[in-house]
Length: 420
Image (cartoon, rainbow, N blue to C red):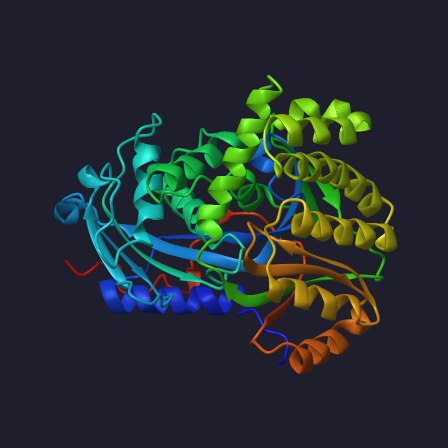
């Protein structure tokens, strides 16, 4: 089980350009890149207006496109994805006047993220969007908790901005457009962290986000050669995840209502009284609510402590915080699963691992591991021999956020007139 090599950006761009030429007979005029993200600390805190600490990944979604123009602009867009998804069509067409429709046809669910962003973009004061053709290719794994959906949304938004020469949105406004698309068109009640991380990533830095104000601050990840970030995708995707996510969110809303606060963030100042508050919640709300509250308040504090540890390159402290975070998600928030916990045990029994935790919504998905560089091969060997499923393993550096690329000058002599 070797480390998964992430395709290089030039290779992705070449594949997308070639497919575009094959399908539409011309070169794309717009090329955008949007990364996935991994959350280093702060799970389920975003929708409680707490703190999170993600970083942008080297795995990216590339969207290349070109406006149809002239007689070809009948309002019909054609989007092709090179990512194979079971039961999903690779090519969808839709009219720009029909993107308000929030239900996707069978086999076109992946396009809901694109149509949603287009619809919200057009409702946000932007100029009229021309019909366009596009090809999407992505190295962000689907279903592994690394924000493949947010990456696609952000790539779509940047494409819309370039197509209309309209980029008047702030970082937060851009993220909110993508979030609304995911809420209303894809039916997923996500927080804002994923979109902010994809948009605002800084190479070599994590992104500290205050989910109340949506203020973002880059935090340098200089471990002085002492540590690497490794992502372990468990290969597990339990079907109960979406339903349990909604339940946890509802439990937190019920707690906030009981304590007469707008969100659990308002109780952060009461951290010294944590045990008293948890006991009260158990008695007045439900037997599990005290544990839910315990996770949210302690996880917020762990994010703040993780920023301090990262700033001082204290790998031991950061690893301990990651371990505490996973224990809290397992025992207090109850969003882990047997397979993920087994992987955590393997990681922590491997010499050279500082800490490991589940990342993402839970019930499968991925782990994020802080590890000594010379221990990566040992971890891969340990997982290969002790884990019964196939686990994809990535070494990930904090990468650049979403951006628009210059035109491909090498192919400007190719045919420029698209097929009708």
